[in-house]
Image (cartoon, rainbow over all chains, first blue to last red; front, side, top):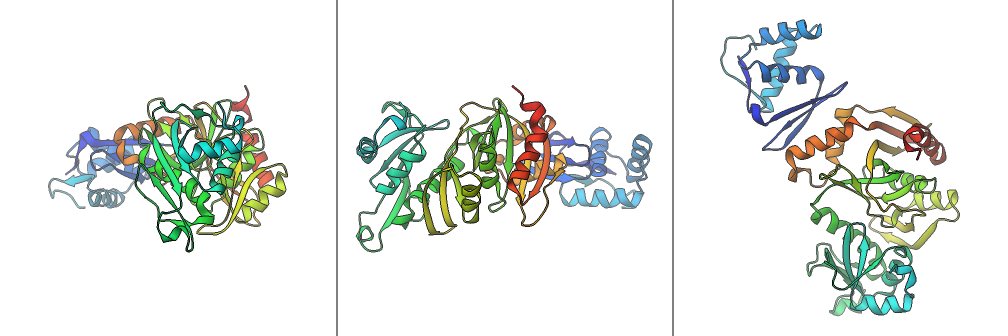
Length: 93
Length: 301
């Protein structure tokens, strides 16, 4: 299961083709693609979600063709940026 | 009173003791005894106001030869602000460029009431184009061309964004043109008002130019355009993604870390109401026409 590291400090601005993530405190800014921004938005509303939940819900919502593997890779990148953290090992990422 | 109303002789006497000049939102006290500095300021800042001695001074700038042996042997110019020397001395013949660079240093490092971008900025009817760019991208050349085509100069180097009102505030200093761009502008605009030319500076040949029209009031950013001069290319104006523009703006900002979430919110608000482009050009006139075309609707008075 995954959650946003510091929910109160994270700000997301989605544009037509890309998005900006801003983390208050360290004042880190990241330019990301829309899938990444959508995953963060989803985790913001639904903390402690698995990558299966995320993939399923985002595909339902946006009609995406996101694969679970894509979501895993994005989550790993977000983890390396310290934007999300893994809470338990009940997943395949 | 404007500087243009003071004779160079009188100005020369006053600046040796220190004179308050209004440059954009700042009151800058300048002291110098270097004839070339005095002549260039008198010429290029002619439209700027002289302020009273009791005015609050933002920066006390002193540009003079040193008092040691370097006053005579390979003479130098020293730049100091409020008694500190933030920049290395330069040969005396480069004293005026040192004055301009030093003033930019003061603003970029100390005027933290503004979010400051390394960008040129021009406006028409209070609608501004922000032109960020790395050195050599051609932003000064391009903003000079626009300033000779109906736009008013706000700055060729530093854009001052107030987070209080979300507007850019003018600091219309002389435009610093380098190397080939001096010839390009002189050919395009034979009446362009240049100061002295300085050769062999650390940035090559430099000449400062007085913009024909300068802006006096804050303006709203409506376009963010990244100009890039590229020899032998057709003019290309391509939409730039907003997120990418945001990231590039931060790369060109000096002090965004001071403002946190306020900076994030303000930049997003500006991007909401701005069109964002990458401009690649080799023909300056053609590029100016292209910009005038895309901005025509919003700049009608």
